[in-house]
Length: 143
Image 1 (cartoon, rainbow, N blue to C red):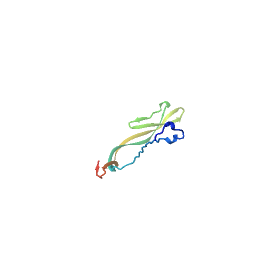
Image 2: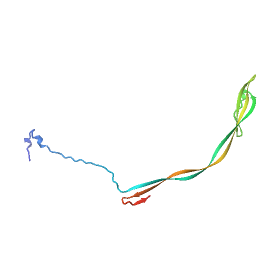
Image 3: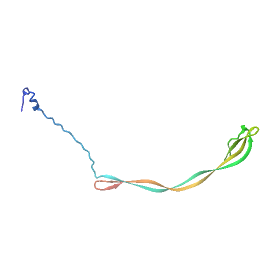
Image 4: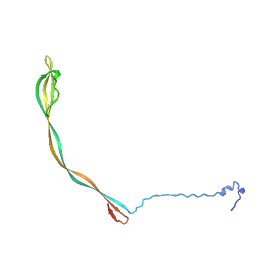
């Protein structure tokens, strides 16, 4: 059918529409079992571990040693060591005609060190992992 465009009027224009077709694509994803896979076996093993270690202990002995000696204010004794013993003077002011320091007592602190062996057994854990591969036929191989 052929029509002369000069013969078209507004009433007939609607009759001559040309349809346009458009294709669209639709994509979907799904999980497919391929028949292949791996199995992982993990176990925890315990094994004893012996500990043999030296431990140090400090024992402290405190002795009160009476001194009862008067010293001038500017000659107060300081804390001192006498060998392994720490000597801490304990001071007290006393009222006399003049003020003096009297060493009331000293603390003699002696430290002795002793060593003792400590032996014990503790359980340590370690993991082992095995990997088993298989295909769609059920054939397996272990790595």
